[in-house]
Length: 315
Ligand code: NAD
Ligand code: UDP
Ligand code: UDP
Image (cartoon, rainbow, N blue to C red; front, side, top):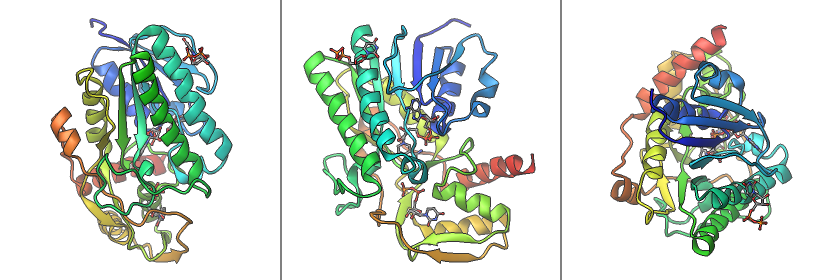
């Protein structure tokens, strides 16, 4: 196998990071995975540990990092509301100090760097679906602020390192993504619903379940991420990447029950503060600049994810 590039993936032991590492290793890159294992797990990257072109380093991105690489994917940050709200100060530090350190590293190395940003940039949106030009409606106080504002500040840092230091940047706004390698206690809606359904335990709907999300299967998302990194220097983003197929949370619960043949009942709990009522990406830019559209339907992605959790719970 000929080694292509040296690629750093921060947050590489997490849900998305582990799929990205897998893809980059398969492509013949020399991959350095950096993670502090806050939400990530070694088991996600177990099959890569004996590969000659994969290396794992335990490190917190809020601290400086001196390594030599050609490209950086900056994914380090807890993504589930339950986990990013556990230590909100650390969440902001991870987004902001982490971005500064990874941008400083990229600047020294003249390396191309991609930021895993988020649809949370738009907060609880008044415009639907959300195009990149929309500036969002985010609460600077409140339980989601540490994540939303941390990610917004990181985008600003990326933009300023690009204009001030001529850095090659790519900012990707990721919308809700799901698939294998999600932690059973991740806390996000797809994994929560599937785990409860497989155990025939009650499924909790927050609010009336009429809020919407648009769910992208992980393989499509990773395809978009690798494509964005490969775009010409002039493409910096931000670019939305997600599946525009929008569903209510109640319909998602019914679909999961249907696909698992579960006996779970639905129970209703209060809607958490600042929970966005609707979310759907406008993916015009992703189509135009990356020739990307998602290919895996929600139901097909759910089947694969159910099979993963079924195996996991059986162990
Ligand atoms: P995840 O929680 O599974 O993975 C995050 C990884 O980052 C974990 O392995 C964790 O241990 C690591 N990490 C956290 N803080 C760190 C630190 N200070 N130093 C080093 N490592 C650290 O979440 P995910 O779904 O894989 O999300 C990955 C990235 O994509 C995140 O930046 C997230 O904000 C972004 N994103 C994800 C989604 C989604 O739907 N999955 C949506 C929008 C944005
Ligand atoms: N940094 C790093 N690795 C490097 C180069 C820089 O972690 O290889 C960190 C460094 O600790 C600094 C941050 O990145 O705090 C920002 O670097 P930059 O060069 O932009 O700023 P400065 O060093 O001037 O503060
Ligand atoms: N949700 C729910 N039950 C759960 C987990 C989440 O009803 O067990 C709802 C949540 O209130 C939100 C949506 O599902 O409206 C998506 O939540 P998630 O935490 O997955 O991600 P978000 O997009 O809110 O960051």
